[in-house]
Length: 113
Length: 115
Figure (tube, rainbow over the protein chains, first blue to last red):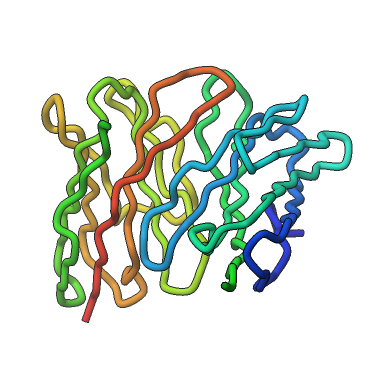
């Protein structure tokens, strides 16, 4: 089983739509979780960390289910500028020194006018 | 806003040559990383560096790779004898915090082409 798996995509949605991305991870000792976005041929940019209680940042909501080893990202009222590849990232090394980030393959989102 | 910088943006080299990729992490960050991304594939962890030593490395980071922090600002990745399969985008990243949250900030990358 791959360490981090994501919806294969691509997702093509109209502006204003709500879209959800799913991610699963295999290492139950994973400590911290993130969503990054990556535009074509650019560096990954941090979108948000994912906390156990779930967290929201404007139109973006992240959820974590440790029992199911599942992470999600919800984007509401999607904008054209949200078009990118969304990367699920898991820190698989135990705290306090864990620094091995494992990236999922990404899910491509295209928001259409 | 502080950012990670990398030079060069694009490096072309011949197979068997040595290359050094350079990074300037964010100034108050303590942890430094290198990743690579082969075209069309996912981002892969290479190595992390803290307190002037490697703290973790992946299977990809074999004896042909080395990292160094030669001064107070630069962080370098050296590939001793490049192979065709080393062609990729190499990203440097840095993070400030220790503990359970390691938000990493990435530089724009160096595209390495080995011919």
